[in-house]
Length: 539
Image 1 (tube, one colour):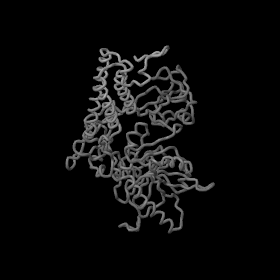
Image 2: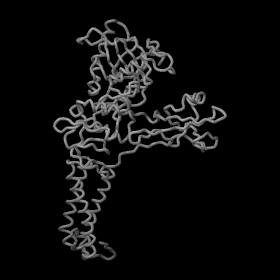
Image 3: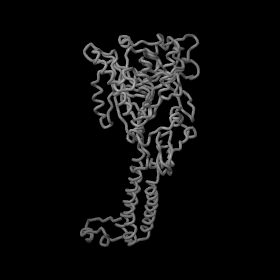
């Protein structure tokens, strides 16, 4: 990729990665952070996705509007147009100058001219266009600022439309007028609806560049720098990597004798803690050879580690100092299986089993015991209660609880104070107070929605709901005004079923056994006298 950048006349401001950031680089990075309302002026201001889990599929993908695109195997860069120049900024905050220029669209107040304070997010890829020929392209998948207009609080589709109409198309028109080919072609990345997921995977194999997964982007969530829980990425199992902090434990006699401890981070309250959970780095691969040559360059650094089943991992007996005593183990980390969301289905099985027992016991007793009270009172009640229980159970588990879903009406406008809190990444309730609005409304800084009076944020579901009472762990649902009647009904029906079973047991201990001829289920054959050799067991 560096050779392709050089061929496209893309030059780094700083020649050596090991040298400190130049003042000009710090200035440009600070401009990017200001455009996206970042709080850390010298940090990479791009949004970072989180890994997709089975729980997030149910809690986010199936409840919020999302679009999906292929995860390009390229180099992540922010594109900044500032004072007539174009810069590319990678994740290491290394700034590259680009000779391309971005013309303003026709009809703009400053047209003809060049973009200023325009910030895009995308990936630089080297596409194979023909046999033996390649083209360097910048694939735009988000826009934060265009010609002084702040787009961070707008919807994703609006941001993409502005990038296409005011940046990409004007540049293509200028290139067509000049009759020249751009060194770096700007293109808008293709996004699809979730129901087109099969098409995305089919198209990914035909693209002129490599792919390594999928990215699910929320439509209604604003653009914020740093880790975004709503922005989800998925990789095939063979491409998954885990970020560890490396801690090198060296031997006293030689720098080549070492073990590398893998540390993971845990967030407790408002602080992160780094702990060792028993994982050690396998001693194989080209990168480990580099680590062995220069351990100080890797010690304390965050590195991506990939599982290799054929690797051999040495676990030393002493975790604090170097020792040659220990054991060799096959492979590395334990495979993590998906945590399927079994809550509602397990609840259905348990409740239906209780309903079956509550109905089945009186029904069988009615066949075998002569009790008018059982036939005329208990049985009708338990059958009515059974149908009511099924209806209320379905309404609780699958009904609408009053969740406030993200939409353009509920998300905007974002209060300035809320935006600052979101950018800080605070997760404590006392650090994220609700912001009062008009007519009793309040803005939840955790859900990023405006909510009516009487709403509450459920810490378990991580959703705001109207008329919240409590979260029921058994049903896995919030209990609100909408399903409170069903919730109370099914609790009452539970006692009805239990009472019916106790009454049935009492009747079977006192009522006389029913003869075949008096059974309400008797047929002509069952009412006949027993014939020789035939055995009847009505009990």
